[in-house]
Image (spheres, rainbow, N blue to C red):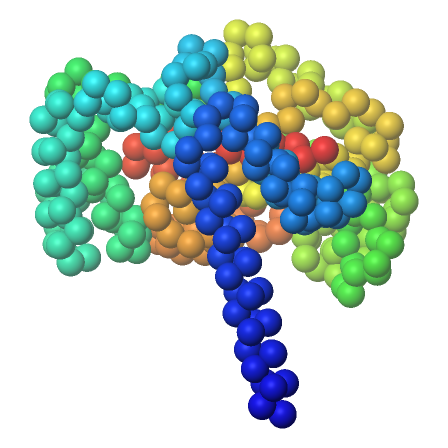
Length: 369
């Protein structure tokens, strides 16, 4: 029995030393190899570890792809280092983020002043932040994270503006926001093979210069696969059977949307971007509907601003649904929840508040397929 235990102990030690040796060799070569040679050696090790050839398997293929992945740097910075695009680059006392248009010259004392100001704001209570915002004639509504971001952004933009530095500005990117929130057929519980069809196509047009709602478009759509609305769907959306029975089919409504856009010179004289409160409107509802109706997916809807992402990233909060974003801003819901045009109006109000608070709205979501 003693001999058996000794054999097991020796075997375990041997396996442990073997693993440490392999890890050490991998780290050693990544540190001391350069250029494509390090990628080749690393690939050889991964081939050996995961079986080589066509037998890598899913995990092995992912590991190999990640190892061989090269930085996708913009043309103007090609050949200036091996850092990934998202990694900041320190050159001549400047902090550059290659995947953005911003460059911070760390020698500029303005950034020390901003840092000091941020430190003071971090030490403020909610009541102190509200008092300071009121003193500056700024909006005092919202939870603590929102008040803090609003105050920091105000001082940062004020200090940078005084120094002649560029500050965030949505209207530099787009003249208009087209806020969309589709309503679709639904059942409760939802059958596994159930396909949702769009039954309301609303658009709220926001002028980024005036930060006001300028116009809106709204149309019901007659579904084809499930022409009879479920009781659950009618109760949820407040859309009636008569409204969809009298409506046009999706291709006709989409043509009317494009005609409405032409009257606003969107895409011609004025730039615009789609805004939603998540990925589903474009990725799921519009994508599926275009395939069902056999119409081309609109090119302008291949990328959009996902306001849930923008909201959480700007205000430093967790991801929130529409109602919770409004609650965090201490804004009430105007209209009826789950009615497309009312949802879109409330999403537009949040987008306007973000711009008023100094947030630069930018594309952050794209069609996945």
